[in-house]
Length: 508
Image (spheres, rainbow, N blue to C red):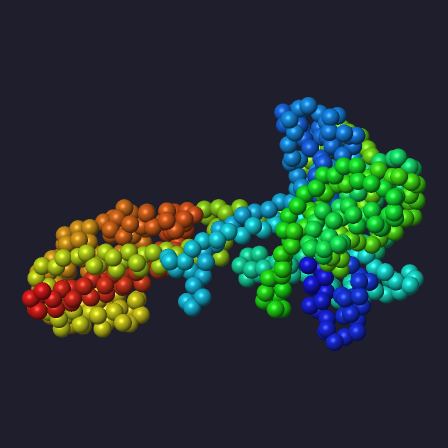
């Protein structure tokens, strides 16, 4: 990912692009989580196992046993974390804190979620975590290496955007810091289990895969993750060492080319953390082992694949603790008083869409006795084309039961009083029903009380279906959209009355 970000900041026609990206002189190793003390961890070796029924902090490294018959008799299981510090005096497990969130899928044409679109999940890393990696730079001398490092640091800058969905609360804004003093010849620090001497004939030593390996069988050219052993034996020299034991993990690696908008070919890979135990047939110098660590094996070397480190045979039983002091910046908790603004916007959209569907469903079930004239229905529906606040205010003036000049004439008002509605959760005259709805539009009675309209709209059920966080969110959301919902309901009822009147005239 760092290599891709570096390539994105450069012109492919620039000769420097070939030097930093394509020539292999600069290789970005994988970034792994750091401990609370700032030490870079590595993938847990496949050979490391934990007793199933024993207390924590006790683990067995099966690669340090001579044969399978010497393994512990108790039941073993995987370790509780995926990363561990192997090159420090005190081994520690490191966990990557992640979160899983559910999102609505958007309709591509409408640009927002609908009731027909589905849900999907995003797994993300929590903010505040630190990860460490290395740049492998090759040059004629230290000045040339320093020049390439300065160019890479200047191009990447201090911040970097990683990941996807940058407009949907993610973004992956990473801060970069360069430790110029941490210059080393080998990936592992000179502590712990790193091999720092010559290997004598008959001695066993280990090879740890610190990144995934994608290789091919030498004779056929087919993708074969298990070809690492043969490639290592060939690199060490004829009859230098043989594979005594191996603990391998496999996975499929792919990727996505954002420039081409196409997925990269998937290939079977040997997973990082795989262990091979080698037995030397003749003396192998430390300089030869360092030379093999400085290079990589297999394909996609420029992307950090195929990195190895040589380890010595250590203790069979290890004591490893979990790094519980590693700081992780947790997102603010959602409270009933202050839900985030993004959450309020999503809740308002979901609640409005659900209530709109329920309004039309409710209006389609009404039954009308002695409906008003079509001209009176038309007058109300024309007013409802105005903004909802103005429409409700105008209807309030019309429904005044006095001699106000703005009120409806007695003949029209009597039509509304004779019309009876059934199926809206109550049996009531059209006049009383309109007065009640206009009164509710001024106060959030629909939210605060268990009234008949709240029951008819099924607000409590809609709240559970839309997963609204708190009743306070419902009240705040409904206060903003209540006049619009009331206007929509009145218009839907008048529409249904007009349709029933037309069917009655046709004798249907």
